[in-house]
Image 1: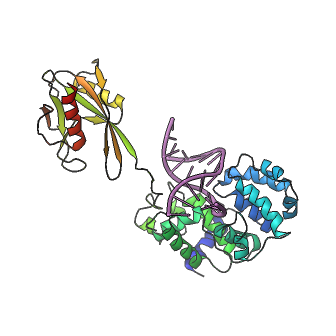
Image 2: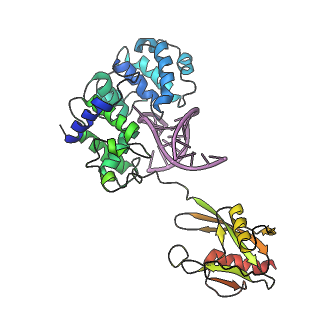
Length: 341
DNA sequence: GAACCGTGGAG
DNA sequence: TCTCCAAGGTT
């Protein structure tokens, strides 16, 4: 047996969950619980599970029930195709759930992982699972470089799960891996001190538990809204500050900016006096696309003469038509200021 | 491979 | 308030 499995099973015997309401109650109960737990947290599923099993205590009872009755006991859980598939499958299999992996997978609502779970935890046969918990544990332990939902990563993780799952006690191993993921190897603040796999865990060794597993890539690039102070004096000059040499727009001149209008106005008051009444006017937003995000800049025009306030940043008063170095969106804003007049 | 399916909890 | 995502599977 792989040392990984030995350590995991030893931990499970002492610290795993052994009192979940669907444990050790046979293939039917395992099946119902597995379907109910798809994309659903344990604490959410438990009351539904109790009601469901009380009303449909056996495969035959479920097969003989009305679909509306089954759906009524699923009401509130979501993903209602799961309930319809349960009912359909109960009528399909005729008295007993198959043991064969392919036969299980052929049933509606049962995929590769659920089929493995039914074999391992329901029938007591050899079976391999790869659910969200196991993915997280294995992704961290192996240092999986990609989002675990992608096809390449899934292929690697399935192969890893197959190689690590012991022939004996594969049901306990499956439960142990889920318990690890649910109680120790959580998405945030994992308790690595208590983990039996910490010694050779890639994420642990490299201090990357917070970065792994790699999150799902965002489909739309995020939009950052920034508020720009367009401070103009009586000579119609604009106040700009030089950005640090490193980072975005390094060394270029930009208006002071903040994450919110309130923060910007606070900042503006700091330039004048804490109790100053700031008269401001919103200018048309400036949009700018970067490689990794979209900038939505909200310029706020404040007309006031320069003060003696010194900020710890090199600054300049420039006319909008000057050729000082500014990034494209600031250049665009300055040209709009010229047109505006 | 991506969209879709539901609801509730966490941060 | 809002995003992310949780014991996945189907189309």
